[in-house]
Structure formats: C-alpha cells, structure tokens
Length: 211
Image (tube, rainbow, N blue to C red; front, side, top):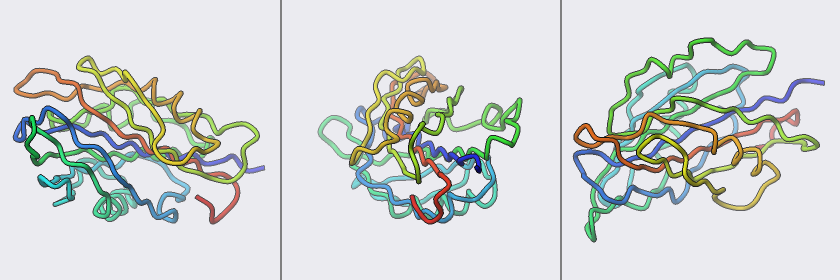
C-alpha cells in the first residue's frame, strides 16, 4: 500500500502597517485546482498578496519559492475573494501572506532546518515559527481539503480555530494540527499585534483524481 500524501497549505493573514486596519480581512472563497497540489514532492512556497479596499486581489509576489509550487500558488490566489479590512467603519487596503506547506510522502526525510525558519518575512504579517503536520486520518479513503480560520494572538499563539465550509472527514485532523501551530506574530510600528491566519489542509490519499 502506498503511503498517503498530505499537503498542507497555509494561508497567513494580517493587516499592513500602511493600512493600520483594526479588523483584518476575512477569506470569502479560495479555489484550488487539485492537479498542482498532487505533485509527489515537498517544500514551502509563499506569496505576499495585496488587497484593495474592496478586498479584491491586486497583486501576488513570491516571498519564498519551491518549484513548481510558487507559480501555482500565485495563479490560484488571483481568484480568491476576501471581505475587506476595516479601520473603524472605513474599508482599507491590506497585504496578506499566502503560504503553502507541501508535505512529501513519509519516506522523505523532514529537513532539520526548514527554509521557513530563516526566511525574513515582512513584519506586518504573521510568519510560522512551528508547523505541526496532521496525520492522515485513520479509516478514511480518498482525498479532501479543509480550510481552517485561525486567530493568532500578539504572542503568536492560535487562540481559536474553526473549519470553514462544508464538514469533511478530515476536519478533526486539520483542526488539531492548526491549534498547535505557532507564529512570529504580525507587528505594527515594531509592536506585536493580533492577526488572523487561514490554513488550508489538503489531504491527498491513494485514490487518484479526487480532491
């Protein structure tokens, strides 16, 4: 039996110092074409995404790349939709971090010093300090995705997490892992602030063409 492949896509979300938003944007929809995420390889790709005052994606720039995932991530995020950030009652622009963590099959060794630990991400967005990878759920076949909305405190801890969208058999594994993630918190004018992160866990099983 082949070892199931688990892909984890992390979407870190925070407001910019430029916007000085008191309420970070929320994700409305995120479409991910299944084919690019099924590659039997691993690593992290990350994009810095700029949103306008309507929450529309203006641009996406790579912060960290691992081919072929960087280009695929940039293409996917252009179709994502957000509720705008707010400063009081006023809608404002914001920047968000979209980070994909792609886990290779279990036969691949996990790097002792993953690249994300030395990447210098903009201080206005949260950046992972510790990533917990969920196990593939027992007695579950096929593939599935779970979008987790997580609030990150000013000390980098996940204070709440819930699954977004229709319930799946993968929800519990995704939520348990999300609650263990820690971050270098977002900062504004050099001071840590609370932010919001979206983690999209994509579980790839042995059944091809599903997910």
